[in-house]
Amino acid sequence: MKNLKIENLTVKAGEKTILKNFTLEIKAGEIHAIMGPNGTGKSTLTKVIMGDTNYEVTSGKIIYDGKNIIKMPVNERAKMGIFLGMQMPLEIEGVSNADFLRSALRAKEGDNFKLLPFIREVESYTEKLHMNKEMIHRGVNAGFSGGERKKNEILQMNVLKPDVVLLDEIDSGLDVDSLKLVGEAVMDYYNERKPAILLVTHYQRLLDYIKPDYIHIMKDGHIACSGDKSLALKIEQEGYDKVGNDDE
Amino acid sequence: MNKITIYGEDIKIESNDSVEVSIGEASKFLNVQSVKIKVLKDTDIIIDEGEISIKLDFYINVLKGVKVNIYEYKHDGEYKCQYKYYLEQKAYLNIEKVHDGKQVTEMNLINLNGEYAKANFNLKTISKDIEKYNFLVYHNANNTVSHIVNNGVNILDGTLEFNVSGFVPKGNTGCDVSQSGRIINMTENLCVIKPNLFIDEEDVVASHSALIGTFSADEIFYLMSRGIAQTDAQKLLTKGFLLNGISYYKDTLESIIDKYWR
Image (cartoon, rainbow over all chains, first blue to last red; front, side):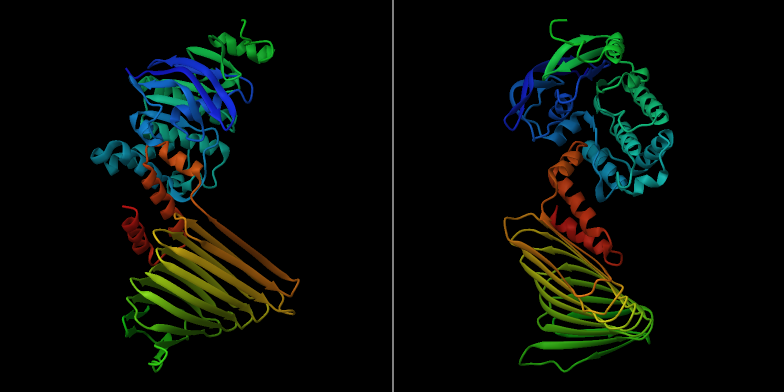
């Protein structure tokens, strides 16, 4: 089983320390949700796990499948099975979704890559996610709405089949119908493959569809408190000021 | 379809009745060869140049109401070329150029002489040595349109320069002048874009943009986060950047990119 373990991780961006001795273990088959006020390091955490070199890891470990991956390049982490669904997926002019996905899958599968199953799989997921079939031939996220971009991230997740799924505010920009669709697609993937999932969200509503085993409140670069889904409901009612202080 | 093939000093012409092509007397002293093309009817012209050992002067005249697509491919040579385009009323000139030469120096003079004449120019180059492109675009009549797009990727020992100047004199109303230049510089060498607009008329739509830089770190991160190696990510982005807007020589350009980003 491929587990993700983060031990005493301290991370800086420039002179500012963003994550402070952050520790968390996510086992295969577990869903963890991280909530917290803006600017507490939630998105940074997901990017650092993925290997974003804009951040400097000053101490700590990220252990995946028994290996410390701190010095591993981004693409190698992805090939090992880590996936980051981004908060604001980029538009990449001129690079078609098909070329992008094909290159990604070819990088992962090497000589085992087969074009026809790839095409069929993409068609099946675009239909499931209610995406325009033509989008696969358009530039990556080119002219996509916020919701379409998030669906495209979920499409990529389904095609690449990661063992660790990091979803950074996958609910932002989604209308209620799309939120349900995306939430159900994530749960379908979870039920099929039992990955370790780390969700970053501001809102309890996403958790109506994706059912976390644990909820963590992050403040000032570390986990201030943890609990079950009731914690999210409490935050919805009382706000972060009253919930998730270190002494709770 | 018409085709002009130029290899070394040899010029081969395959043309139909839509164009008149004449080859001038080569100047031995200046080592210049002139090629005159008069476009009489709507048509396409392919120009394939390889390992040129002479300077080339092109004179291209597009007659009234005629539409012409010119697809040009330069490879393997050291090029010094001058192009003079003359567009009559409602003439439409669409140019796609793909360059993989050793060195290239070009001067392009585009004369929009008739009302509603329109020129679209799309250059894609991979510069590995010295490349310099100059454009002078003259809007000599009302309601004329020019869209000049120059995209280049600078690699190895390359230096790349785009100088584009658009002119609209007073009284020539309703003109549309746009210039867009972008260079992806993968070296420490100097690259230059000079987008100039010389406009002496108020009733004009004009825009220019110039961007020199590398691919964005965020784009590279996004592609790598899906398992794509950094060099492959750069290759994908290069293809996206250069293939856009190219039709006839698209496969050729893709092969050129594959050659340099193995």
